[in-house]
Image (tube, rainbow, N blue to C red; front, side, top):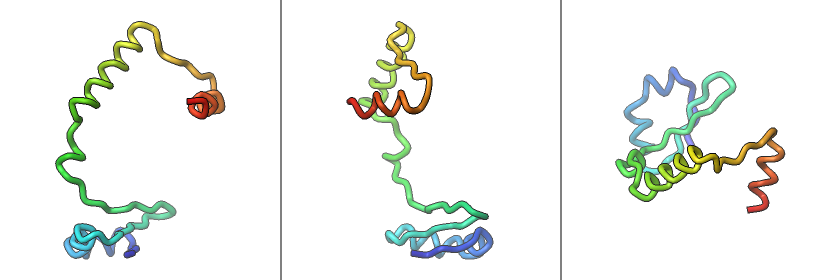
Length: 83
């Protein structure tokens, strides 16, 4: 695992991206946050026909008033746990 600050990443970007391409973990630390560098494939950028269909179904449910409304996070968590 390679952890570096933003300046070091910027100065060594090509070699760090090569490491990520080869499956190595590259972590950039900026202040108190950390970011993981991972390569994406073209498939990661495309909405599949199945996902597009599910999104359209969800839109139709919302339009017809079939949405579920939670008043707080605990209610939502309880609903998810009951699935």
